[in-house]
Length: 108
Length: 118
Image 1 (cartoon, chains in turn yellow, brown):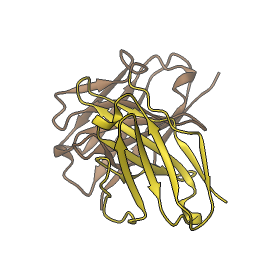
Image 2 (tube, helix red, strand yellow):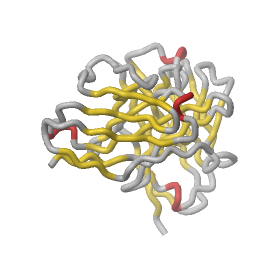
Image 3 (tube, one colour):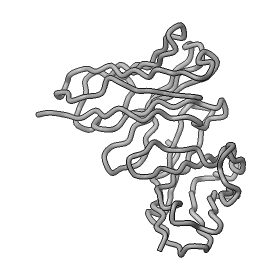
């Protein structure tokens, strides 16, 4: 089993930058994906392959990964960004997929 | 547009079985691997099962192994999850999700809720 550790909550003022981390053993060697989930809705893919954005996802959302931590950075945070965020990786050796515990982003 | 519509959830009793379905449309279903992911009330996402595009390869989370079976009918563009020996720990919203073929899930259904009655 591969454990991904996220902070339970992150708070940020509108217009500022939020950074949500995702810790894992040598996660820097893996491809990391990020999802946004708003209350009562299905998750939405935000970032795939660590740094790529699906069409329709604003450039304000970016991803990075190095060593034992990956990060999702949200620039110029808006009230509408308030949501739960999950990181995820795929272990291609055992064909298992793992999610982090999720981080609740609060916009102050 | 891509659509995934789950069905089959409901209220079940401990030890009983349930089969979930996921009807896919708006894309070429037979070329994409698919997954089931669940979310217990107020909790995070948990991957449950994977099935390759042609149904020849599958994988399960430890919590599902031996009790759940994922399958697909590519002629009907439908994904299934047969769940046996259900327990209260299986209470969750179950989502089907499409794999981009890089291990990420680019489209999700709206989910179907499985709850328990004592």
